[in-house]
Length: 414
Picture 1 (tube, rainbow, N blue to C red):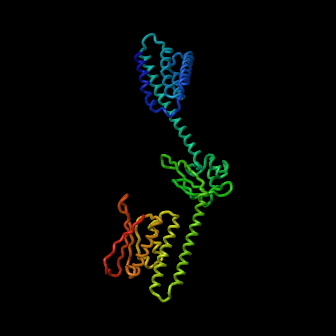
Picture 2: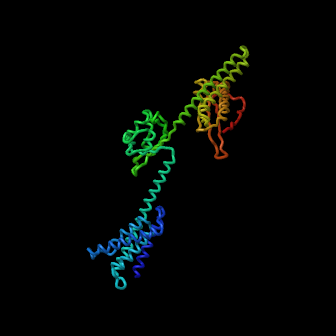
Picture 3: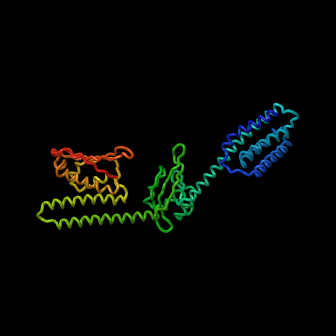
């Protein structure tokens, strides 16, 4: 019996991985577990007895292997473990008929059954847990799909639809199999069909023919790759953005109207200044021209802010827009360089006026007043975190000699 006890101990130690792996599958209550154990052991015992009537030399534990696998598959680790233990005892005492201590052959057979059945139970428990984990993930995935407002469709690597897609049917009104293969493209606007990429992640807006009219959808396509890097299938999520698109178009129309009104307002001011200024006063004429130029600089900055739709504006767009009113020959001698730098709408006006004043002075008295003069405009970010600041440089070269010392100034903004 010592070998039998060691076989049972070996069985318990072999099942340790199954103990650690279990937990993903649901467990049965105690009564159901023992009912399952009894059914499996008794069925295997009667089957072994029946087989022994026709094949007397059959191995004693032949029919107990399926019993252990069934108990582990249906009930999990503990039903499988107790089925294995009872099967080992039943096979040993009922079909080996030991008269006294078990012989070496009987002990070896029992140990082989215990070890093989233990390995079988480990594999069955692992497969059972993997199955239930996959089922749980599928249920979670389906719950997420039900909770989201997006429509999810699956296509193969070529973009063809190989199975019914209920979500696509709901939004397009098409019925299977009319949209099988590449037939789903019939519901997509011809101008938008080439926007969708099936080879790399992409997010685009397309028009899809609905039950009544064209609807705008935001489509996010995610290719799923094989081990060799080829696209196996593509998962696409579609979200209806028709109302958002309509709102954006309405907002763009309003912003366009505001830009038009701003230009008209500047034109009215220009006309009033020209009409009100004296004809023979050079000082007033110079003031009027300077004032109108500043208004045009503010107008250029205002256009940028309106086009950005209240979003930060890049300094690389502000500087050229401010210098646009100057003569083309002067612009060819101005060099602009700097990284992307976003400015708030409150800062854009101040930067535009500063650039306009510097450019005006350079054209009248500085480097741009002569033929060979040049202006280099550079900016860069210095420091990190709270110490980060922007350095803006206006460097003139090739102009008339400088009679006074340079003045150094800084412009701060956000």
